[in-house]
Length: 187
Image (tube, rainbow, N blue to C red):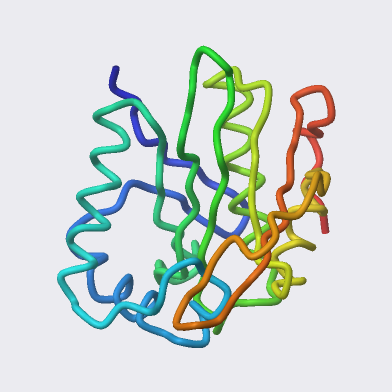
């Protein structure tokens, strides 16, 4: 079952399918040790990872298992990161939310805005009942983004990841359809 990758617009952002032209900014994003410090994988070292990532985005759509969209700033078209809805299960009406943004735009509300737009699509178009998200327990800013858009912290996965010898715990968040506030964009 194919799942068309959406093109979504917010006041300041455009969310769209990835293209081959995104390979360089995507590599710059994922090769940053600072940006990737709370991820479950180390920073990229090979540029070919970008092509694989973009191919995986298309595979999500082709297999009907999710959508990963590039995030561009509307004012200048600059690539600022990505947002995803993966592990979509139409039988359970559930999926997982993720996002990664360039540190130059952190603190501007772009992650909140992009995630909110993707959730509107998810609950509306896909008729989801539950969306799950995870954040490293050291990544308080990401936890705050999730809580601002209505997610509730449901638990902690202890010592879930070991990346480059660094052991980390993960918070699990959930958002249920009946708790979703689609009409208001949080500040």
